[in-house]
Amino acid sequence: MPKDDLIQRLKNPSSKSDAFRDLVESYQQRIYWHIRKMVISHDDADDILQNVFIKIWNNIDSFREESGLYTWVFRIATNETLTFLSQQKRRAQYTGSMDNDFLSEQLTSDPYIDGTDIQLRLQKAILTLPDKQRMVFNMKYFDEMKYNDMAGVLGTSVGALKASYHHAVKKIEEYLKKEELY
Amino acid sequence: MKKEHYHNTKLSEKEHPFKTPEGYFETFHERMMGRLALEAEVQHPPTARVMVLRYLRPALALAASFAIIFMLVYYPVKSLSPSLTKNTMNELEHDLLNYYFTDDVFIGLFTEDNSVDDYDETSIETVLLASMSDYDLLHIKNE
Image 1: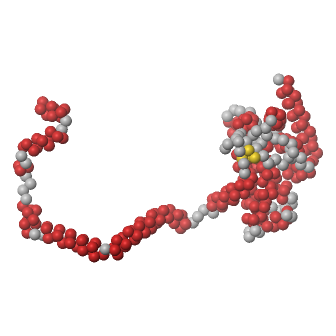
Image 2 (image 1 turned 90 degrees about the vertical axis):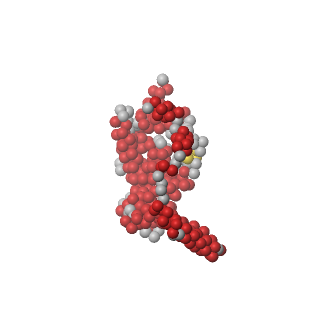
Image 3 (image 1 turned 180 degrees about the horizontal axis):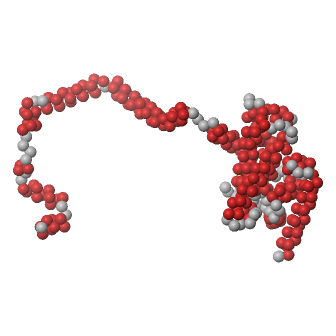
């Protein structure tokens, strides 16, 4: 289905509900995994995913189509996720724990995580990165997104994204090497 | 949430350890629409009239149930034996009125002597012994 047609149907009150179903079915998995890799917990990812679609439902009329629907939806998901993480970190600071401690705990306690030892070690290494760099790494490494698409979603230049990804890979390699020594 | 209900629907070929509950994506749209309906209710709360009706609804339903039960029980009984119910009540009322308004009973209500002297001492003692414990009796005796 052409995306322009979907946007027009979403903006038309008589077809909004049906179009929204199509939108949810088209995007739910991509957005879910985008969020989930950042917040680790399934329940948190589910809450954020619902918030994202509520924002889309409420704000579709103000979508000016300056970017593609895909980019707009991903940008909402990215902002919701980063806002959630900064709120969690603020809470964690009150309890005296380190920035990403709560995420490391989720990695061991969430019932919907069941990976190999290598997968879990990689996730631990990824958690050592700052949130935005972590997002760049996930989008490039797991989702294999093009730098141009990432630039549209994250509002950053392609050059900055390449540099960020390069540094992220180096940091992860160093972390894994250090872990092997102990 | 049970760990055994895993359903992995990754888009990427590179593996990550995250899973979702079984049927999560299949039911997501329905849950989403439910949440949207809730949000709409919060944004547009029901009017005062709707709220009053909402609170009165259980009471009205209860009253209607009683009315239906009454109709279902009273009318069949009445239609099956109308003369019986009517006559029985009338006869009872009539007998009762006759009893109270005969001269002897009516006058007797005002002249009846209810003084304690009519009771004999033996019966009072029996009642007291039955209603008091040994401790109470001993206590009274000592006094």
